[in-house]
Length: 586
Image (spheres, rainbow, N blue to C red):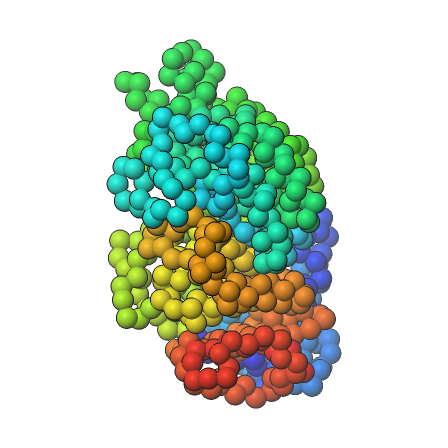
């Protein structure tokens, strides 16, 4: 697709939409930008109401230089209201939808959307999230007094992870919650304002996704009191804290499952999928992770209690594990009902709670309405960035694919990003997490093979729509060939391991994002896409920023009609190397 600043444009940001949600039966004012370089004779708003298309003429509102603004009002006739624009020039027309401008008929799937349901909380969209895997982050002095469990394979801090074989989930370093509390100032210096911890409930593994209870914090982490100290210390520093909850399964030592297996007449028996022979369904066939059956009314009540209790304890929201499979099994699909219950329960305790879904592939259909606010955006952000910036000299491990990552050009990266933005919708995209790596994936430094390309990836992470989520250690340039290898311990006592330049790049990008509303709430227009270079505008009523990123040596492409004002950020501009730059426009 050709990318030009002159194309007709609309997105869900404040420059183009007066508000993201309103009551059923009301309307919302929307705007379209066109250019005198590609003039439009008329624009029609097409809405779909009760499944039937309706057309209303847009009004030519004003002209600013080469830009012509058109306005219309979208009636909220349905809870999720779809709309797109017909741009008429002479005897021809083009469609403008979330995927871009098209000279052929398009389906409704990528229409713009508005909603009667409240938007994600503002703090969740403006966040810089920091993910911590508690066993590998830090040990407090109290950690030495914690007993080593029978299941554990003890390791010394700094030992290499066992990332293949049966001992992988059992290797135990003994990081604890007080250790995290002692290093919160590192997060503040980095510019983080939201902490996301993988599970803290007891479980017979280092990852704790096989919970044995949801009622207490693992004593190996310091128990409930250590969690209390961490949350209070984080809040004192202005940091939010997100928990991690497995809604799809428990561990096979969980108290619910133990009751279900020992008493076939128990209420808990209905919480799981048991066959006639007594066997049970497990996550992806793993019997140690028995799958929950959310059609059981008593499970819904029990699960809502877990969500509410820990919100009342002090959490600011949840990341929901395996949300894509939750409430889905064979002919059962009540995923959105579960999502709605979790979100409503969380917001009943704290109206501005954030509820974000893990979804390792395409979350289309799971993000509209009153369920998950957003997703961990692997396919709409991580994969495209990995493929554009991967090391071309060596095979690169993938995440969830049976082959190595290919290296693709800028056109492919942008096409993938546009496709997922179109299918997710604007507000879910902007609430979703831009991830360069997590505890489940290779590290970005390993994927790119260099600090320079790693830093370019971070520029994309912090300046594209969405919420940057930094996996602890990425800011130090830590490496890892897969998710397990990426769970290396933080090198607090090894100054040589603190790559200060990478740390400074992350801190500068976090400050840039925090200081400019265009980066947290602005729109997105791609204005140049080539094999080795991309450029885009982040537009907000208060400012417009231009971001240029080039993965090879050479000068940036000149972009006529986009006058560069104040220079805000730069990488590699002094030499013949890959580079990035952020400017104010005008």
